[in-house]
Amino acid sequence: MAAKDKLSKAEQAAKAAQNNQYLQRLVEDEDLRASLQSAYGAARNAYGRINNGKAPHKALLEDRKLQGELKSAIESLRDAGGSLREGPKKSRRKAGLGRMLMLAIIGGALAMALSEDLRSKVLDALFGAEEEFDYSSSTAPATPAPEPVAGS
Image (cartoon, rainbow, N blue to C red; front, side):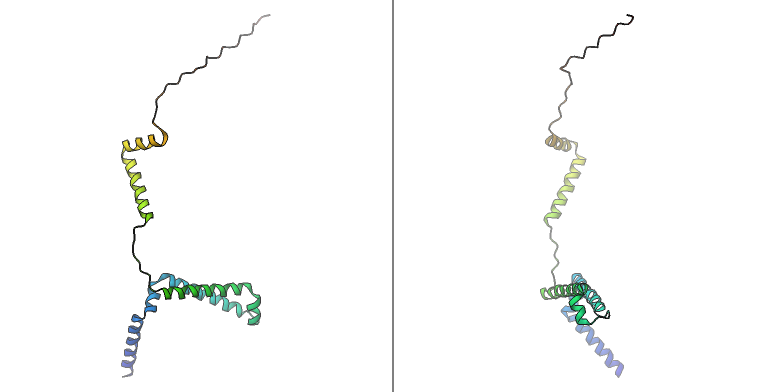
């Protein structure tokens, strides 16, 4: 009977875990997990610095790295707590301005690549219409220098 009681207790614990909104958030929210992992790492580093042989009160007052680790742990815990208080984030897909702009740029590039008429219109609009011209010089060619007289 003891094994059956343990099994029923484990089943009840599993059901309670499934119904717990905080555990569900922990499973689903990647930012929350990252904040908690960061807080754990910073707290672990701070604990290691406190146990380095100095008196704890001296380490807290003098060790700047320890103070930085504690500050980092506190900020990460604060972020995690705020994330839990906000409730689950609703993920909804929205077609933002960035996506629309990217589609317009890709569509425009494809249209220019496939249509020669459109390409020439765009180039004419950007750089002006092509004008064919013949170059004619307005200056007279230089006269050759007089040749020196040889033999004198």
